[in-house]
Image (cartoon, one colour):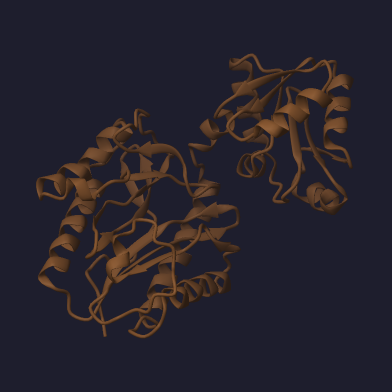
Amino acid sequence: MEQRLTRLRAKMTEQGLEAMLILKMENRFYISGFTGSTGYLLVTHDEAIMITDFRYTEQATVQCPHCRVVEASDFAASLLAELRAKQLTKLAFEKDHVNYSLYESLGEKLDSITLVPSSNVVEEIRLFKDESELVIMRQAAKIADDAFSHILSFLRPGISEIDVALELEFFMRKQGAKCSSFDIIVASGARSSLPHGVASEKILEAGDFVKMDFGAYYQGYCSDLTRTVVLGEPTDKQREIYDIVLKSQLHTLANIKVGMTGREADALARDIISAHGYGDNFGHSLGHGLGTAVHEMPSLSVRGDMVLKPGMVVTIEPGIYLPNFGGVRIEDDIVLQETGIEILTSSTKELLTIG
């Protein structure tokens, strides 16, 4: 955490920020280690202060060894007192994570303090994962892989999508995950054409595609895995679109590299899917950054201008979605390295037929 504070202060110096208020949960955790739901993290050039209430004081004292913990019933009043004690007149805040109501409230209560909007200051530090983070992310990926292996023996016609999602969640928690990284997607049959078809009461039937997108939230970090299987023998059309998605995903994994932009990485998969006539059926981005949040920078998309660099962790998840028929997505998590990539997820990508 001390190194992260040092990097944050360097960013603050670059941008001329004398103090910064961090409220977004993932950013607060990343800089301080605090996992509680309520707290103001104030970072200046000489101190980090965690302002929280009675419920979390003891927890913050344990989790935030590089912060001074302040117990408060009125967070804004305590924040103002800290700023005045340090004779600070300007406070940067995360404009992308502060709603207008809170902005108004802070403006009224912070008296003579000038609020300075900032964007992606901590997120730009979070882009690059060090080895301690990767150790955790490898385990989060393993939990997801193990959950996929487990669910294969559970899948069968007659159970609901919700049954599948609950079984995945229960298994991952038993393996040490705090929870799933996001609302688990289980979409079967024609519903599998919904890219974000969160599990419903639909009953799995013979012949269905079953698309499952899930991940483990483990020690503050996320994994994100998608696999698509068939209940029974696949039709020629099912096999066709599965093979195209797999071809595009494998091609991307073989060719993505440091120095590309997110747009160039996206094109690796999109060009193959488009060449087979399904470009209009791949409507989302190729992938996204992954870390303390399940969606973070960089974006691998047609609008992705950021250059990919070593230490970034991203998902590779092309898909084809045919309304009233079904859809396929195949997703892995990778770490970009100077010499290539490390693939964190290892579940088979063979088209599995269940039953």
